[in-house]
Length: 164
Image (cartoon, rainbow, N blue to C red; front, side, top):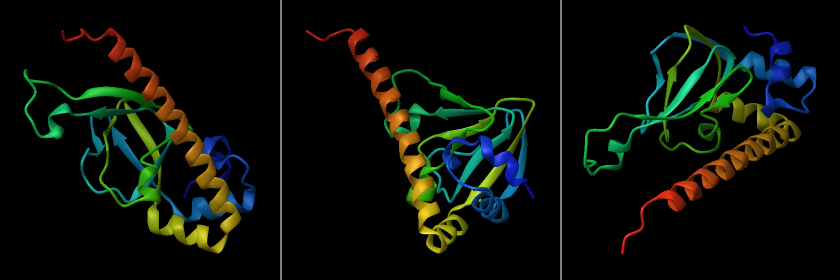
């Protein structure tokens, strides 16, 4: 079982006391992956959030998932790298949709904390104040990611050749 002390450096748990961190740690489990191993694939159901305890995870999107074949053969594109103390897959805590990207071990090994959706929601029901704080932190994290994506998209649109 992961030590609650290791969760003090996780951004989405900011503002939680030791007791609340211990409850989160008690409902989670650890997993380890080696370089190149897939943690989860894009367009598959998600039911857990992950926190990197050690190592790096690459988040990739596959353009061919959109349905229509791209004009040329394309490889999945890396959109970010998740490092120690950062989380990914958090949307699975909010809804039960499919994964919007794939997660792949980038480092020699990655050590992850896995928080299952049902266990997390049960804790939130028992302690709504804690649930509010974590969900607020997740919303702030997602908001930051949306702003970054928006900025990148605007840059690509400005640099894209215009049709006449």
